[in-house]
Length: 511
Image 1 (tube, rainbow, N blue to C red):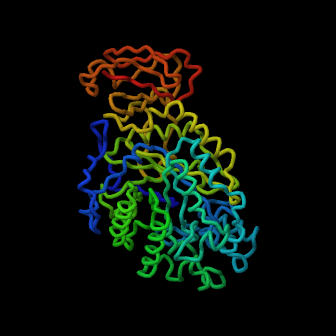
Image 2: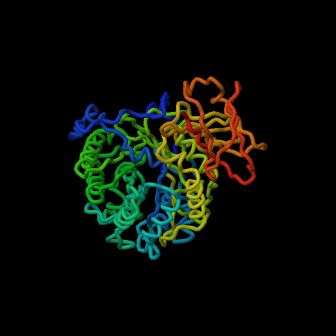
Image 3: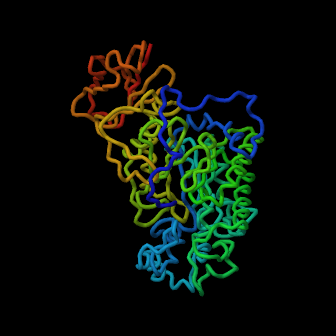
């Protein structure tokens, strides 16, 4: 993943939704004709309803980089930086201090001249990997789709590639990881996707004489030697497209997710080609597919032609099209590392609620160990989220944003890599969702009394119009609760709040 410090671009400009069914009107069957490689044709695309209903998916960062389990999934890049960390955008050295990954590598594995990244591949055995066990964890988490990394910046394909020999069938585990996960997901009616991070492979590795990154035998993994931070050439672009098509054709993914670097100017000509090809394949497969990009560095995808993804960040208000946050259970990494620091399930549930209230989905990453086991602490967090969704899922799944996303004093930062600026929600923060005539009020924190006041739903408020509240139901236990609408707000009285855990959802049944 990329660690950028950029403000959110025009592609993520906030749109406001004025009804409970935010998003474009679904097209009729007559519109399902082949897409052409132009933006006018691609504007016909609609984010699938199954995606809008699903709300919650699991991302999986697992690969050769899981073997050293140090630093992050960018270990392959940083281990080749003895002279200081190199900026991924400018190609300039940020400092003159050897990276921690480089120092760890030479201490643990020896000099780069003797042990390069390729030498981790035989160590990546995945001996305890069981796709069905993984999928059982995902089902228990309440997630409705899964997106394992198909190929990361390191260039190693986690599938049976017909384009590169550097793949998990011919090397390492000698197993079709993507194929096994796809089959396990299908058995459980979980939508399956694949992510591509390959674009950055072009400039991912540093090179010096004597290192394996300079050896033509390994250019299939490290990319061809070229001017540092040079523009992507036509040969690599064609290679990137061949590998992308291979993933599409071989695995028929419901979701195709792209990391940064694909949103550079050099790739722009392929954006229309790729989108049209994938959408037309979806039509041929008779399935609604979902293309997701960050549209960040070079925002060439016009609004409405794909589903916007925001890395480790959110929206501050309702966005008028479906979108997605991708973030990790880990605060400090996407792949498993020995010093992995997990977020709390409460904070992640709050994120899910906030995102859904603004017309988005949450794609939450887990990082298995190199042997294929999911660490217990990550499983526990996923199970806690699943337990919460068992009780409160009616307020999440199949909902759409209400006319306003909610209310409360806690501000939410906007844009890529902004999550670190956010504070925990309080008992005065509420989020709203809707399904049909039902409005869901989700309290983000526990108050000191049994009474909760929602100012937005006061008597004669501008949102409900002629609708009246018939009853209020606490989803935890499906219990009716007392309510009163006054001039200054809707008062909800919840007995025995000590037995509750926040967040918790209340259904307002309207007449």
